[in-house]
Amino acid sequence: MMIDHSMKGLLTSLSRLNGIHFQLMDENGRILFTCLPESPSLSIKNTAVQLAGKTLIEDSFQFRYDGRSQLLCASPIKTEDDMSSVLMSIEENCPSDNGTVHIENIRQFHTRLISLIEQHLTLNEEVDELVEELDNSFEDLNLYSRIASQIKTLKFSDEMLRSLLRDLLENMRAHMSFASFPDLQKEQMHILKPMAEKEVPDPKDFAERLIQNIPPDEPSLDDHYYILNHSYESPEMSALAKKPFRFLSVKVQHENYSYGWLGLVSFEMNEIFRRGELKLLTAMAEQLAVVIANTNLYRDLERFVINMVRSLVFAIEAKDVYTRGHSERVSYYSMLIGEHLGLPEKETNDLKWASILHDIGKIGIPEHILNKPGKLTDQEFGIIKNHPRKGGEILQPVDQLAASLPGVIHHHERFDGNGYPDGLKGEKIPLTARIIAIADTYDAITSTRAYRDSMQAEKAVAIIKDVAGTQLDPDLVPIFLNLYEKILVHEVN
Image (cartoon, rainbow, N blue to C red; front, top):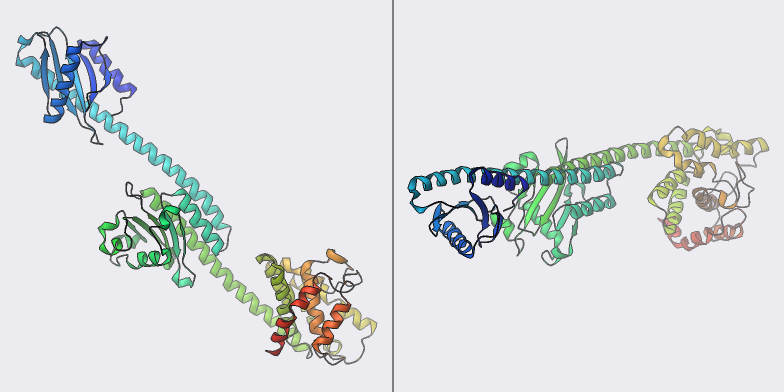
């Protein structure tokens, strides 16, 4: 029992008012607080310990005289944590012949005083619980704010999901966190603390069976969650692990469409999942569901753009009968080089769009120039040379393709600075443009054009080796040549 300043003040004031000394003792007879002005005699100490013991055993008011003039009275105090303690009053100069009326008055006084003490203790415990809940709520709010801000800025991905599960595991009282999205055809993901690894030898199977064993008629499912604070309450759940566990899971749901579950498991059975933890996990699941929905919307938009781009490419190649399939082949070769270089996802995506659309500017070139079998005049060649910049102008209004523009505009620059449209030299030429230049050169050599027949792949390789360092990037050409076998297989297919 915690004796705070206000309780000490109350007992001290009562002692001064009526001359009765109070002390509080624990179940072992240890004095927690006393109003006695000086150390009591050994006789009173012994009497107090014996009386306190009897009071706790019989759980009732007790009294005893020490000698003929000192009255000791004791009453048990009940606390929420079941810790036993005793209120002791010591009255000096109280002859034993005062009779039962005085004893009864003391008993009634004890009853009222203990009621005040118990109310005070209960209030203190409630305040402590409230402070703890507020503290937990503050921590939960901080965690929610931090994780939610991260989730909102990311597309749905394995990396984002793994980061979320790690944060949940580190900041919530759990030994395992997992995410299961069967409808998205994604592999289940889970993270365990070392302690849980021996309890859960097969985490994937464990998580799947947890979800499978959620009772379909569980009322909490109407609010999109399931909570089990002791696995022994469910025979099906109890059979999943040798050691008892707690389980909390929340549906990841957006506008009545459920994508899957977020779950937490703990093997610490001295606690239960708090209401705040349920609210936090629910909030995280709601944010995640929005991200998934937005990602799906983004992918739908991306598919639309892809189809639109393909239509543009087909429109270009329909004008130039000799270059059908050219853009897709250039894109394939470019992506092989980009993959070998280990480009980040963003740069890979930029390369993909730039390589597919590198000739988009040809859409404005008259067909008689594109399909002319003989040598172009200077004026006609000038029109052809304008197609990279024209492509940039066509694509500039599309915000999603902004980062792909350098590859489109500069894919005809030369490494020695003698290319077009800006005469950029060396590594001042954007990387995407240098990659596309190699792929474009190879496909141009190996394809039939209006002004010449196609050449053998071996001849194309020899030419590319010859122009490395002048027309093409000398560091990228060897990478392309190392990928030559894959390119041949693609051509055969």
